[in-house]
Length: 261
Image (cartoon, rainbow, N blue to C red; front, side, top):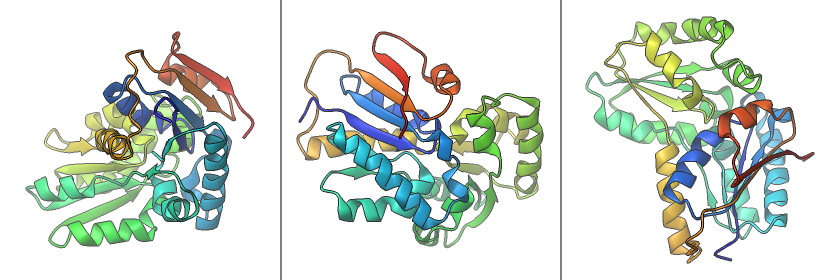
């Protein structure tokens, strides 16, 4: 099992921001990535819908022999990870907004959280927030429309800039010094957010933490790939492949293909 692939699924291409961190830390691991772009964004769907989509993705990854499944989608983690862990005999790694480090390091005691509606309304998010922000003011902002533009290849478009200017308005007047990105798509707009926010605002996400946790779980279950060869990566989308190809690039170790899942 140690040479089996690590599986990933996300509501589109956003989870590649986490996938990239994992393969950088674990260059010898093989991976399979599912971009469920035709059903993006998960953040506007009901909890039952999110669980159903997560089960569909999990079933495919298990059918391909994956040894571990990472869920870099914040909405899928906060709404479905408990269900998945209770119904499948395979390790799962979820992702949560990086509220804890932001709260601990904030000097102004005010942090912003940019996430989807599905993440912000979930019980797991509420529990995490209550645990770490008792003496912190949190300004929650729903990133409506961001995922759709990224999935359409409009990350750096004028349309995206206009959208973000409206979204960040509550953050500009709140004296935050940390902005937590609570969606795996959002690291791809970090450069635009930096242009719009004051220089003292630090923007953080959870990609590096997920990569470290992946390493820890592989070691715990004795599943670490000991091969000296670079890993092979299969990335699938059930929609137009253009954006996924542009983000991950193409080389002899990466295959990007359409899959009707």
